[in-house]
Image (cartoon, rainbow, N blue to C red):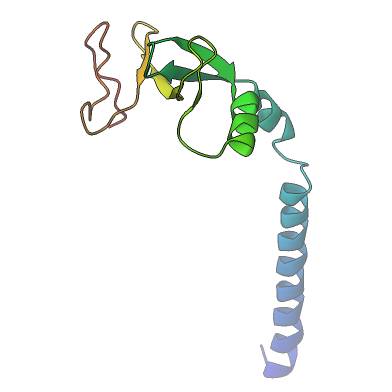
Length: 121
């Protein structure tokens, strides 16, 4: 191909690539892709653990996000004892027990109830 014919072809390819990239960006940023997944994710249970009274329960992630917005920090008021010792916990994949996340004392996330490891290796 001569240089006269090459330039319009390269410009056309560049324009097509830009249009495709723009469409994909628009679809991803406007919520066209993955909206149902994101909403169902917000309703997933978040394990919570109180360091003061050992109370544990699960709350929807959207409620935990509201808690983070209202009270930024790592510990929150426990609904059971009222102390500011509530934090996100970890749910054992083997027995379902909820326990605190402490990588310093428990680096492999061994469940205190069943003793099995829950780390992601």
